[in-house]
Length: 227
Length: 279
Image 1 (tube, rainbow over the protein chains, first blue to last red):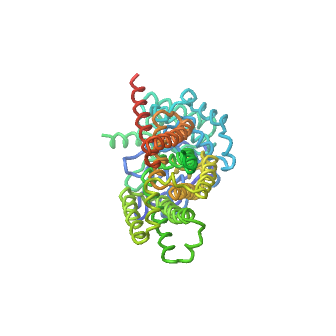
Image 2: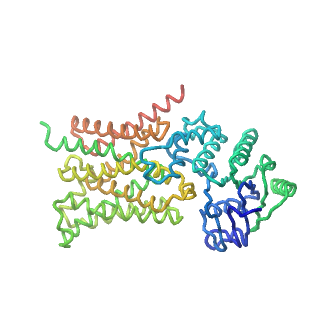
Image 3: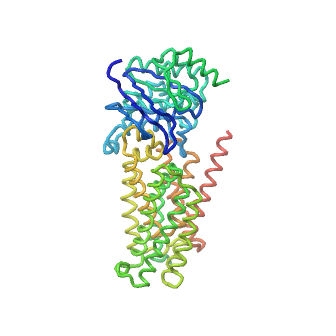
């Protein structure tokens, strides 16, 4: 592996005095596609949010250099109290990538549609976000993350509440973005099967530890945990 | 014969109907509707505080041109720091519970009454405000209201894309390296100014009514934030005009009548949207 794109060294992750993951070391190279699995409450989302810089490390070091992150949160975190269309969701993302004075008059409409197009989401761009299916919402949230022109995507359970066909379509889309744009991706999921073929590394997070496992072991653990 | 004050009252109502729905949608998107109830009441305590100071001869409270200027200063003095403080608490990751907002509402209500218990002028002024002081609005108060709402409304509209992101998904904004803390504080400042100036001019009832009811009315049939904003403003203006019309026709208090008209409009639109969804 060459120079890592981002790195955690001896990192302790958690909230206040509650340690979730301890002495963690992780190096991510450009173009990596890392799938993170583990039981509920094991620390998957904490790991992702710490990498994103949303949660400060309790100890250790985080090096993210010039990485531009694109974040796809859990769907449940994106509930709007007022009507908002898919296009407006992506417009907000596109605006975040600009200095605020450049957002006053322009909504970067062409760029917004380019991102929606990349995620096959143009056909429902004008529909209210709340009326979209789970899979359509994920495409919109992915388009919003792409609107930041990221070098690294962080996805928190993008396949939750999505049927198997759509899971497959999403994994194909992510594989394409990884392959064609060289986008690095870290993805937390319980539905690991669609991503096994494209994952460059599998991480298992449980009981305060995070370890790299091979696909067979990952599958076995996931099945053990699910049963 | 139409009294001189009625056109001013109508103008004030139209300004409020035009501008407060913009702030109201900030509160709804931020899931802080109760702030729209508590902060106006806290502003009332600020107004009472300055009237108390004036009665007790505190020198810095006696330099205002008239009561409306004193009221505006008092409302801003309490509303803006309160919203900045509450935003800082939320930003620190603490949940702002409804219970504490209710406590703040009750405490400020009682405090306002206590501060004016031996001040007849202030008590009358606040009593008028409670009923919606639209009909009594002075030239100075109307001018201050118009200028303040125009400035804050223009800023909120110009920065709407960034503000909407901060309100709907601050985590995404933080990952995109937007300075979320600063924007949250700016939003609190804007909202505090709008609420403070409005409460000082027309009272908490009318302010809360215009903050929330038009935005909820528009949510019944808007499909996007863009159309929601347009319909919210339209609902605010309709409520202002209808309130003025019926208050004049039936000699009702203008503030109360405007709020009732806005509520009726909300119910009609919600019912209409419900019926439409059946077909």
